[in-house]
Image 1 (cartoon, helix red, strand yellow):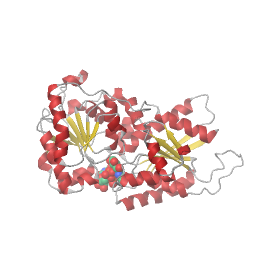
Image 2: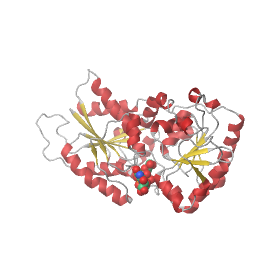
Image 3: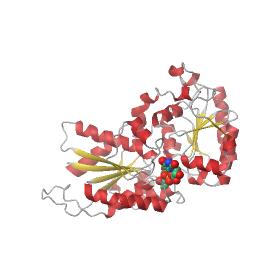
Length: 414
Ligand code: UD1
């Protein structure tokens, strides 16, 4: 038996972990397997609101976590330390062979750091197998090697540190190997497997198209469940949650100013992250938004602020949008596969293949620059119905999770 402990904590983790969970289940269902894989799912509780966490478990059919550490919010130090304190005894008790961490959130670095220093006490059963002689868990980092080269981003620090202590570095795009090699990582630890977030998108695409979110928001008519994108009135989708964009009043105000001008021609739907919601109140920006929840009047010009959406509803909303404006990393990748123009409201991206292979453009946060990129797109939406063709970067084919489990089984069991 090989024991794999998987860690998730924040919203973007759940899609990535879902692919690994389903790959383990498929592996175990194979009658030709050498050994069973036991899986343990740990939720750190970094995100805890129903709309930021449980709705993703429901939508993705994820099993309930075996353990929820319930750490909640705090400063970076408080949150990271609390996860480490609560994760250590769990790890020592469960003694997994591998700890799988995904992405770049505080839960990722906290749990990998604990795993790197843990020593198992009584672990030797005399079988002589490589599995049972292990004194600490191996660390597998999914989405390794991405770099924005911007160390003011907490996620960049989490990525660099996690990669430097991981035993398996599973990469999603080809240039990650160059980044890791430059940092002195042994290339034998690096495995280019593809993108687990895209595995989940491809798996759930058909289910997403049955979501009624467009009707509930008044974008499409009640009868429009069979609508093609051409018959759905054009709209754009916005998400913003990076502290560098929303915590600074001047920066956030400038972005909202640009969005308001875009929204004069293209209605914008904005599912608002809790951090962003707090800043909108704090900075008195409510006047720039129309805050209606389900079923407003026909979707009209302006910025429509709504509650965060679950995975299936959000994918349906995004898939039918004509333009995305975001500071999310995952959405840069999802729009690449969906072939939807994406304007990224950041100065850099750790996912450059979304620019070279995909439809992503970097606008930064200057309102004139945002408008200069968005305006021609908004004008072309009014005159043509054509969307860019979806592009698949290498290995974004729906099988990254299976590759990860095949590699772990091969290296650990045989
Ligand atoms: C975290 C990740 C970020 C990821 C994002 C996705 C880190 C360093 N940041 O940022 O990389 O892109 O998640 O959403 O790990 N809050 C709630 N309910 C929740 C969770 C948070 O109300 O369920 C509020 C709290 O006020 C909290 C704030 O949102 O203080 C920020 O949450 P936090 O997890 O600290 O960071 P995110 O901005 O979500």
